[in-house]
Image 1: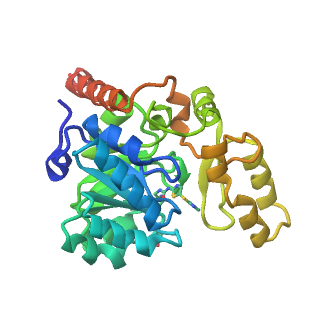
Image 2: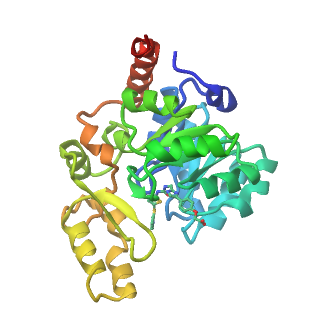
Length: 314
Ligand code: TUI
């Protein structure tokens, strides 16, 4: 069975995390992944603590297995969500889009396992020194807020630079990529985009259909000008935003253009106005299935490939 030290550290069956996608990863999806033996993660995104608490309660009503909460550090509610997860003593906290150092002591004092998402070697070293229990090294193939480096380069660099367990993310949607991540030195993988097609994922039908139909060149990175690059599916919104970035439009106007676009995609499925976050691996997502089946399929495929890896050596 696919297994690593991260399984023991967190008390999970498979070393497979579900990315804590803002607006998408609710208590129901996270619980389904955890029930399936992976680590489900609720995405706090820009939600206030009260709404995140509701999702934690939903997850706890479905599973008694460990799950996590992802805190998006650019959120205006990051402070109150950071306090909430400590009060609730969730098993695992992952963070994204910033530096969580100021919360680390509070989380660790209540026994939370802290796993920051990093997109650079400098951040990986800083987080290890700050007491992170593990790191998610996320390459630019990922959906949502992305860094510069590809997963293939970032993961071995982070493995060399720290002694922390490394979970690879970005571009991983099946057992082949998971096996490759282990070969790069990772001891786990985080999968986001593939779970958009899970039965338990409550996004709008139009969003799922867009992911299921996506081809290899169907994502785009926008937001570089404002310093928050974001990968999403090409759409009328993303094309208009991309054009505006390289025209004379002011920063304030760009900011206004982006406001609400993630929520509109997830809840309204508005093909014109929505920003449909997804990674490059959307092109590999072909069918809908239960979250637990996704976890098991990835684990079993990776196991098979790793078992057969000797065939490459004479
Ligand atoms: O965070 C993500 N993915 C996200 S966040 C998000 S919501 C959003 N809202 C408004 C603007 C932008 C995004 C949608 N998807 N992934 C993890 C991740 N973290 N990727 C890159 C980073 C990161 C970036 C900078 C981590 C640390 C960091 O440090 C900056 C610093 O302070 O040095």
